[in-house]
Image 1 (cartoon, rainbow over the protein chains, first blue to last red):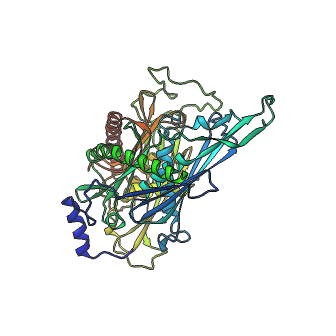
Image 2 (image 1 turned 90 degrees about the vertical axis):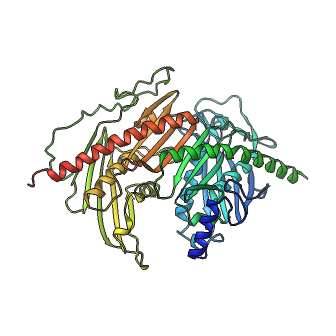
Image 3 (image 1 turned 30 degrees about the vertical axis):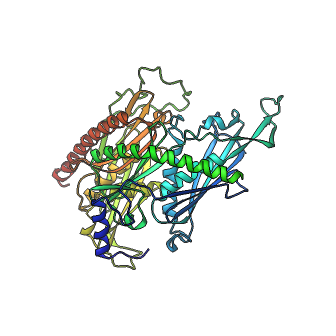
Length: 286
Length: 249
């Protein structure tokens, strides 16, 4: 990224203070979101989301596996994000590793809920086939193709879209399996069931620049931030996860204020995303 | 651990660990009885000591219940990968097992250190734990203990800080908010919250939340955690004062 001059930095900060950002948006306005589903035919589900110049792809693969001994009635989900060097030359080799880990951890936190399963965006018990023996393993992979700020929100949206696009094959378990043996599982090629994504939350990142917060920061705006808080909100308005990024300290009242702003913004974002996803799916079917 | 005996009366009695307890069904709905008998809003008793490692610039030892952590700080010293001049100092954290933890520790401490006071050099923080349990990504397990101990070690090393960093985590079990959970309690939690803050400045440097929370619950949890952090901050300060005013041997 090209460095910013002092004049440009002041321009960005001053604009945000006056509710006019460099691209003309208000503080709480998102860039136009473009969703495309089914971009990777070999995957069980996939989606590509573009927010301005930020471009991310998410793919979902479902495979049969054995559940964890400590949670025999639940399936497993693993989320991994890869930052491709095409986005930023600094991402090559180990450079992107730290950012990938940060994004993967934040996404896992937001989508997988508490240990007991409460508040999870994906219902793990629905992934169990035979308790203790066979379950679905869901591998969610995110790829950052082009980075212009706000990667976490874009990845969250892409994962939500990819999950709506995911078709998990129906399984039939052989009826007379004894307790010790691995039961025979017949994976159907014809029949599929769609994933239920009404519970999947969206992630809203609020970036604090000066004394105001903005939503959907571009890379330039992110370079001027003092700190950022990413909040995951579901359709019912409950907070499903929160991560604070950035080194500067924040007054607790500001964090609480950010939470209420995020809830307010989330309603519009969820509706927008749902309509975009529905449109993308309709497009794909044609 | 070699050699050095610590001549202070113990401030807690360790609770016996019961390894093969069956997973009992939880939530009688009204009250969660904690395995070590603490109240819901009661933290584990803390034992803190600085100067545990002689060869380090600064170090601290912390015992919270069964968790024992040593953190040693080396620096400011010449940066190994210093090809570039930087007018801010660098902080490098290493928490024995994973990179995940090291990066969380780094983020928690970064906001409290006055990096401009040691340009061109690096401060290294090394953390080692016994009986510590980690559990990324759900919540941070005993990371709060490591963070608090690390900030004590930094103060012991004489690194300039804006304020002490205290950290506390909390679990939501059904309707109850339980502070400073042990691994057993956290495995049943519906939601978890960890706050790292600078008590005197009333600033939060790191906050992570998992699970489903309603806004009033988050308010309540944050308030409880911040109160606990300020108490922990006072304990840390008194530990530092003791270390300084103790007669030289």
